[in-house]
Image 1 (cartoon, rainbow, N blue to C red):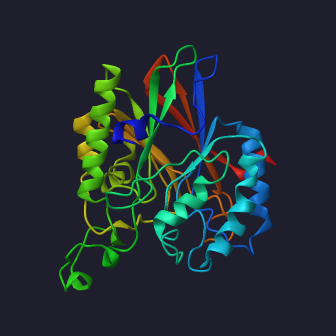
Image 2: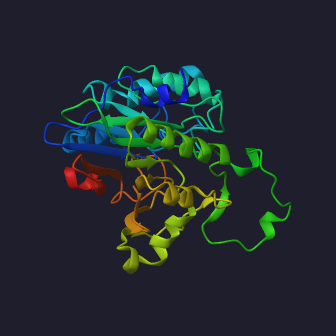
Length: 325
């Protein structure tokens, strides 16, 4: 299967509804184990029932890979936490976060376990860095043509585990506040997005707008935090975002490609905000699990509402568990 053929494929066809709308629910940092907090599974069921999404996105740190280590443990875990979508026959997708990479299973095999679930529509790459790099096309409500693209990128794990040379004195250097120990998107991932976007544009004879989901935010999310009035930033920004060691360049790549209109990320459990910078909406969604650190008032998921007649604008808001009973 060629890159274009793989990018055009979805296990379950995704289409805008007859009213021209499509709703996505993003749940990040579930970060549970087999010995999970029962409130998490209950809350996931309630928020899915409340929001009635067309697609559920797991935004990384889907499990706690420091605890789950074996194939059997991961399968048992996914049997539990995929049920809210599987029993309702709702398509769902995932990206890997740093704690997913902590599971002691090869990443490519691990994502194939996810993909084995009937309603999991995730895909992957095998020839570039990272694994959960893929795109899902959504068709118009009344014709089999692409109206919108859902992009996924793998933000990988620790910078020390990457094939990147770092200065031996990095720990002693004064760095930007949000710079941390995490890896970045690699250049071949950026090239894959750029080339795939161009291929789809040529196939459709027009550029297709989209949204991007990944776990660790790009550096430019800091513009929202530092300039809330200018960027219309709103929500909780209480936690310093500890993100990649370096600026990967994904934001400037998106600006030049001009098709992604929204970026959704997780990782910082006490942050759930959204704002707009350079015409791109940037969103964080707190955490969906009760076992990881976080503030109970903020736990929940982020909704993205898209209209097929205006894919330049994406409406987004948080739904907190505490507000839905």
